[in-house]
Image (cartoon, rainbow, N blue to C red; front, side):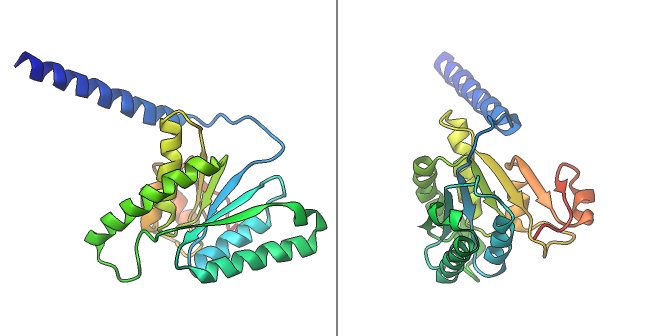
Length: 216
């Protein structure tokens, strides 16, 4: 009986320390200014990629190198990213030497996939996401809603929990979301450092979000 009580107390202490560590990581927003920031961008099929590339177009070359993460079957996004980077280099010759990389991970959820099976595919995606995040160690993760961003952001958070590196997570809700958050948004609202919405109705519902007007 005594052993059970000791084990229960030890487990409770470990759980309490873990919760405290997560709270510290989520609350910490200290960031040392530097000349360049390594950025990891999560792109999704269709409108998600178009919106995130519009947002990237307004960022300076200080956000480099740029790492893009797409689903392993998403060739459309890969083509859009390559075209974006080529156009960027054509407009400004200094961009020719800015490095960018495209990484692929399995989708968290395929179209029309059942929700119960999504749990397993998301875990599989997360299993492959953490080694990628650990290898890249970005300063900033930028995403806007594709399902692929959930395992990436959780992996980035885990990097901080383990004391390896604090990664700033910025989530920009899609312009299409006027009154309700997407499923990814509902999950990452509590995990992101900065949660940006583009409609005042969402700001009213989620006071902790950041409203900057339409940015894409």
